[in-house]
Length: 93
Image 1 (cartoon, rainbow, N blue to C red):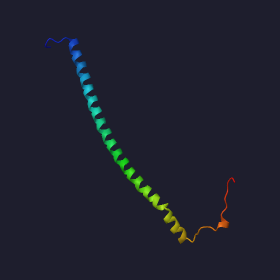
Image 2: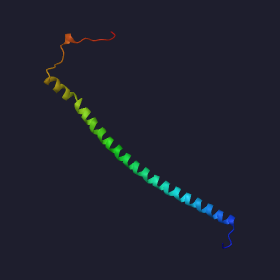
Image 3: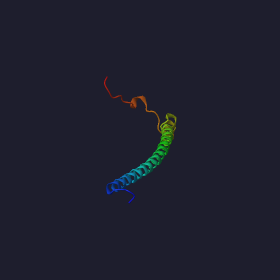
């Protein structure tokens, strides 16, 4: 068999199997890298969308709690500032 001994053949088989295992490992790592890159891109888009939503919600909150709006709503509902004799101060004197 071309001058190969049994020991040499087993050595070549083991070397071939190690090479195949390392190649498969490299392919697996590359696939994982692409999967992680895709997941990262997706999370970055989701984060950007959440930041935009946060900004819109903050504007909405500020609009809903604006003193001008609250005063207008109170007037529409018939509320008015209390008389001085109806205000009670609680606390240390």
